[in-house]
Structure formats: structure tokens, C-alpha cells
Image (cartoon, rainbow, N blue to C red):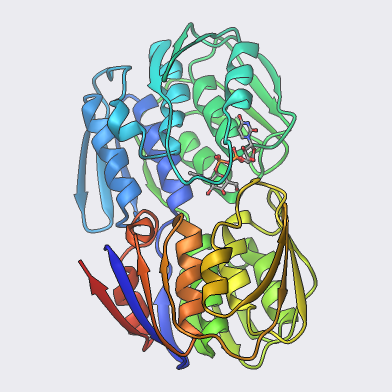
Length: 414
Ligand code: UD1
């Protein structure tokens, strides 16, 4: 998808089933390389990052076969330990092969990862954590060369990095004894990874808390259903909040979205929570309490940009404080081009609600920034053109078709 043309200014109505989580399935794919055997992942999203991950795994000698939203993985034979740099460079999550391959093979040669440009995104926590477990880490230009089976012990993370927690969990599968990760990330995607690993025979306890313990055990393949995508759900909620209308989402865990739901309610949206579904009715919006991003269970950084887009026309002043990534307001110039009033200062942004937005031409900057541009365009009068819309394909399946299902006027230019 190269360019997305959206004619906004009309309310949206409809029901969507939430896709499987991008940020859950990518670590699961890396985990599959650590598990000798055949695994089946159910409810996989049809997104570009998943296809690139499968190509990476195939390059290591694994077999990946998709049938609908089911992925059949075969990692019975020992994998190669040197992922393709061109593919690895397209994904942040390719760095998780470091832990997976170390855990299984005791060595890995990992090219530096890619992913959205949101700031420096260093790997120091991943690498210091592995070194604390006795792994030898050497940096060679664009390559990380790691050797040695992790030993038993405790790693203390000074910040609850999602990727570092996942990498250490995967490396610990092949450790000489139990590994404790203290200061671990508590995101639902960590719990999903632990559930898959436990189904594969591992003994992982404490996932979802700040202390995760992994006791190595013989592993085998397993069948696992991928967690629903809370960020996709947040995007659709913000789209309808921006455009007005009603939305029902099915197949999600509303509790995992609580900070996003609270902000939408404070802004004047009516929400109905069910155990695995959610309904939203959007009306005139007012500025909610400040939106401060942080590690789970705080407001998710991935929902910050779509939420800002949803609140551009909310009456009053909304403060956004971004504490996770240092460069996560790259969508702001595009929103301003649509008439949004946004003051920016470092990691803080203040939105002054404006009555009307108008269509504009803009270039997508990153996955969630592109989603924010779409949400704003749906609430703007006239046509908007979003170039470089391929960013959306990385994390959203059938994006334009799903918008159309809600009644949006959307055209894709190749
Ligand atoms: C994951 C998600 C991403 C989400 C983020 C935070 C995936 C594929 N991506 O990214 O969508 O926005 O969690 O919820 O799951 N940091 C360091 N050193 C490190 C590692 C991280 O300083 O070694 C910093 C990062 O630069 C960033 C912060 O810690 O400022 C959070 O990063 P982290 O939690 O690791 O996010 P990712 O795993 O990259």
C-alpha cells in the first residue's frame, strides 16, 4: 500500500474482530527457533512484519507454512545461527533471535535490527543482561557475535524493557539452571510468550510481574493461540473517537486496554465493556486528564499517536507526556498540516482543541504515526493523501478494507 486517500468528516459505524497481536506473534516466532519441534500458532495477523519474520526463520532452515490465520512452524532440525542482515534490518524483533539461538545453539551472529525510528533504541539492556549470564558478546560493525551457553543466575534490568525481557527469557531456555529476571517488563505480550514456552515444556513463572523465573527443561513443539492485538484495538477506538460514530470490537481483552479506555471515557466517549468485547459511542469530545505514557500497566506509548489524533478536536487543552521513547512525536507536523493546534517541547506536547480539521497531503513516518494520520484524516473535512502508507502494512492486516467496513471513504493508490 503506497498511498492512502481518505475523505473524512463522516461518522463511522460497524463491528470489527480484533486481529492477533503483532507484538505477541513476533516474539513467538523467535521462540519457535528455540524449540526443537513443530509448533502451530493460531490467530496470526496477516501483516508484513510476520511475513518478514517467517522469511528470516526460513533462511535459518526452519519451515513456516501459513494456512489462513494459522502458521505451521517446523524447527525440528538445528537452525543456522546467522540471520539474513537485509531481512533482520527490517524488524526490531529480529534481535530476539539472539536469545532464541543462544538458548538453543549456544551461539548467534545477529545483524543490528531495524523497526520504527522512535529514538536511539539501544540494545545495552539486552547485551548487559546476557553478559550477566556469562555470554560473551562482541560487537563487529553491524553484527553482534555472541557465544556461550547462559549460566544460572539473576539479571536485574534497570528499566523494564519489553525486548530485553523477551530476549533474556529465550536465552534462559538453554541455561545451565534457573534464571531470574528482576525488573522485567510486565506487558501482556510477555505473559503470552511465557504461556507458549510453558506449553512447549518450559517452566516459566511470574510472567506479568516484575520478576520472571525460567527453569530450563526439555522442549517440544506446541499449539498456541496468539493474544489479541490491544494496539490494533486502540487504533480503531481512536479512529471512531476522531470521526464520531459507533464501534463494536470483538475478540479482545478490554482489561489490557484500561488506560486507553479511561482516557476515551474522560474525553466523553461512552464505553461498554464485556469479557471479550467492547462497544464505543463517540460524541462531542472534551480534553481528558494528561496522557502520560509508560511501561505496562501505564498508558501504552504505541497508542499515544492515535490518541492524540482522536483528541485534536476535543474542547480544551490535552497534555501528552511521552516517557518511553525520546522521538515519538514525528506525526505532529502532519497533524498540524490538517489544522491541528499542537505545541511541542521535547517529550511534551499540548493539543489545543480546534473546531475543524481539513484534508492535507502527508507522508507516514512510522507505524503508529501513520495510524494517527489516518485517525485525524477521518475526522477532517475533505480529502487527505497519506504517502508511504506501507508503514501500516507492517502492523495492520487489511487496513483499508477494515476502514471501509466501518463506512469510511478510502482509496488505495499502488
Ligand atoms: C516493544 C514494542 C514496541 C513498543 C515498546 C514499548 C515489539 C516488537 N515492539 O519495543 O511496539 O512501543 O515495546 O512498549 O514488541 N531501551 C534501552 N536499552 C535497551 C532496550 C531498550 O535504553 O537495551 C529503551 C528504548 O530505547 C526505549 C525504552 O527502553 O526508550 C523501551 O524500549 P523497549 O521496552 O525495549 O521496547 P521494544 O522492545 O524495542
